[in-house]
Every structure is written in C-alpha cells, then in structure tokens.
Image (cartoon, rainbow, N blue to C red; front, side, top):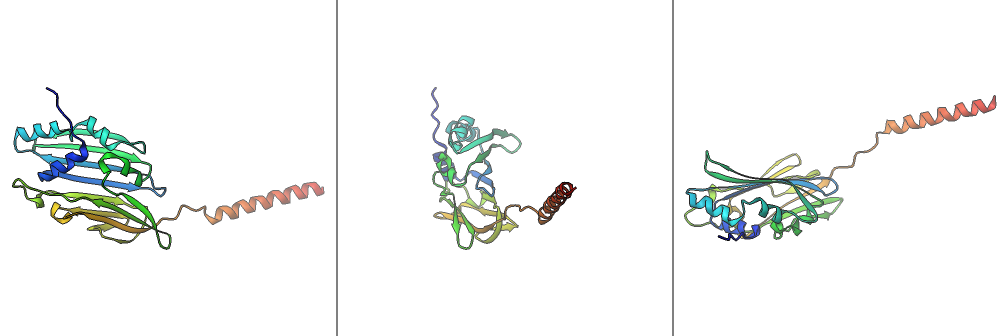
Length: 222
C-alpha cells in the first residue's frame, strides 16, 4: 500500500497539536556568521498504534529529514532515527552546518522561524528567532513536554530574554503554555574581537630588520 509522507513542517504542527513531541535545538554561531546545529526531537508512544502513526507521518524518516533540513546554504552531517524500547520512545537526531543563521530560513523546516542576526548600535549584534504557537489536546498536559533552545553566541551578552545564561551560552526552556501565541527569543551581544597579533612579534620583527640592515651596511663599508 502506498504510504504518503507529509512535509516535516506540517508534521511538527500536527504532533505538537497532540502534545507529544519534545524538541531540543543546540546552535553554535561563529564569528563569521556560519555555524552548526544539533537537533533532537522525540516522542513517547503508549500503544503500537502511536508508534505506527509516527512512522507513517514521516517525521521519523531519514529521507524526510534530509529533505526538510537541507538547502543550498546548509548541509546535514549526520541524521539518526532510532527507538528506545526501554521507555517506549522514538527519536530523531540531526547535526548540520550552515553558511549563515539567516540562510536557515530557506530550509523548509525553519521557514517560519524568522532566524536573524542584525547589526545593532555601538558595534553590537542582535540575534532573534521566532517560536510559533503550540497547542495541546487529547488529554495531554502541556507541562509534561518541553521545547529547549540553546545558543552559543560569539560575543559578550549585553541583554537577553533567555531563561538561563552562562557566559555566552544562552538557554530558553519552554512548555507549550509558555509559548502561548508565539514568542521571540532574542539576545544582544558585542562580538568577540578577532585574535590580534601580539605586540612583541612586531618588536621582534623590527629588531631582526635592524640587525640585518646594520650587518649589510657594515659589510658594505668594509
């Protein structure tokens, strides 16, 4: 029988609607704006029917994952789908690289995320991502499910709305109720300075130059 696989962007909505998907996204942004991302989402099934539904939808299909998380500006380095029979869960883990955070908006799975890094005042950068609204139902309690975003920003954090912060690591942890009608996660940071050549190297180079000039001059005088 032909099995139709729906787009992952719709599937996230569908499964979140049923309140049974946990989602973690860990992103590291480099000084040049490129970076990498690790995504882990999983759900628990109560019956064999739940597991079968998840597989039929395609959200736990490698082919679908590659299609929805790849673009001309990003590449998947690793994608893994597996079941844990000990706690009756099914998981997907994805590792990908991207040319710039903004370019991820051209990836189907992030089309509504409004990922952005913009220039701010006084040589600062402003990061933001939109988290769309999530509804629950069918007897599930939203407090039992989590959505977590972790960002490592390439600079000193000046302001933010994260729920946790440690140096340049910012974490946003939500339940579907926390997100409500949608929420922007945002932070303003001052980029770390590029590594500068130590001053002593310039002095050494100048010293070597002077020695060479003196040597050549004295040899010529002879």
